[in-house]
Length: 346
Image (cartoon, rainbow, N blue to C red; front, side):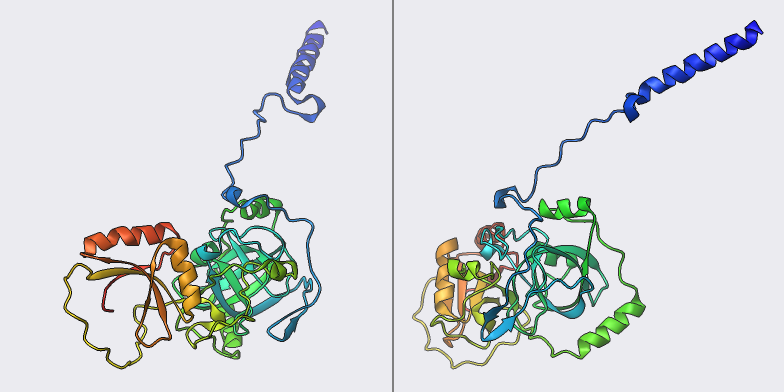
């Protein structure tokens, strides 16, 4: 009997010692220290919050009225483009500062902020994106992605791409990652059977213009921002001339494989030394004023294509291709990943 009592006593003592690690529901034997969060990649662009959510009043751009609304089941196909470094720090429609390498987007009517899954219809690749801006206001596009989002989705080398945009409600951990300028875990690729249906729906829409890569250049004025339109909008009520290659007055990047128009041969130049054989082209515009703005901003030069309808922003000329590589590195450091080295006469 004494032996049995001893067993009970030992068992009770063991239970008590075991419970010491879980007093008040906390296991003291487990390291419960919270790891220090990684520095926010969005820190340079100020504090980002998901509240309060803004829907906004109807607004008019280019004679068309847009009515923001919260559609929980929003799911559409259309075309996407992207905007980048030339708008870094500009105010978005919900008052944040645009981080071109964050994973964000501009949409005409979704609440700000919203979270959407964007699927590239050519590959099925799907990513999570935070909508914090208004646009795009070219009616052949459904959404404009930040440069960072376009890179993650794999469409940054395209002018426009077919996409599916579906409103979702991600968990707080994923929201925080995007608010901090990071990249949320990619979704499972969309199956081919669903892609086939989505592509058929896309084919019913007018084909977006694709000869040039889109990115917007000049900063919007404060009145535009306070009216609910942010970093992705370029006012069209100015005197700038629009060319067919500069849709909505934004700058264009000439593609290396884009056919060139035949132009009248220019008079032969006087003989010069071969000290300027190479240039680095950063961008091209259909409006000279916008080209001048970018050139002054990055310390480059504006050169005409000879026809008077395209104005190229370039570094150089350089004596050799090796010298031009320094200019190329400078352009890429400023975020112009599509800059390239050309012969000066091209």
